[in-house]
Image (cartoon, rainbow, N blue to C red; front, side, top):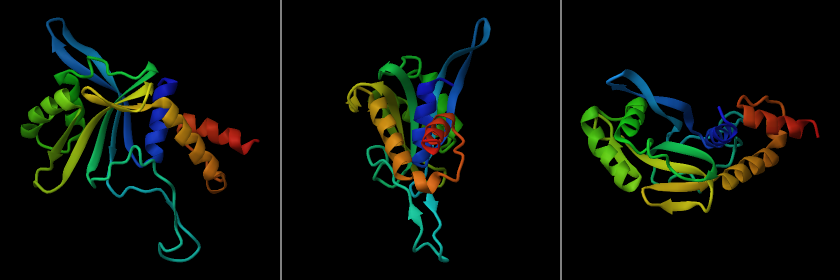
Length: 203
């Protein structure tokens, strides 16, 4: 995994997302099966996900809830699915990621909605960079977003949204500084977080 993907994965974990990195997109061709691209980041977050530290008393009243990045977390109360591309340079979306094969692979891997919904979802993603899907019971809903992480101003683009790596790195740094006393007893598992956390321990 490259350093940029590792950093973005750490950022998403701190914000309550479950992630898969470098998911291969495979299709059949006349020469056999080939990997046409991979998805840098596929992430899922449930609406009330939180990282809490229990306090000394029974019950949640004195628990510490660690901060979330409101620039990332949707306010609509839906399950949030991110299909992400990570670039060390200018934030952009690889055209192969914006293919029907890649987007369908991502939606099927998440498995939130039946196949009958996915064709329309893929077309929405190609047009707008976002879509909403309903679960098989018609009640639970999720939103799916295409995000590009890299250099440049955060904000909407044509068919996707940009979140700058500078913003991502700044959030991770501030988070580890703010909660150093709380997290110090732990060895954080992700390599990016683990190294940054270790540097703070040995200062």
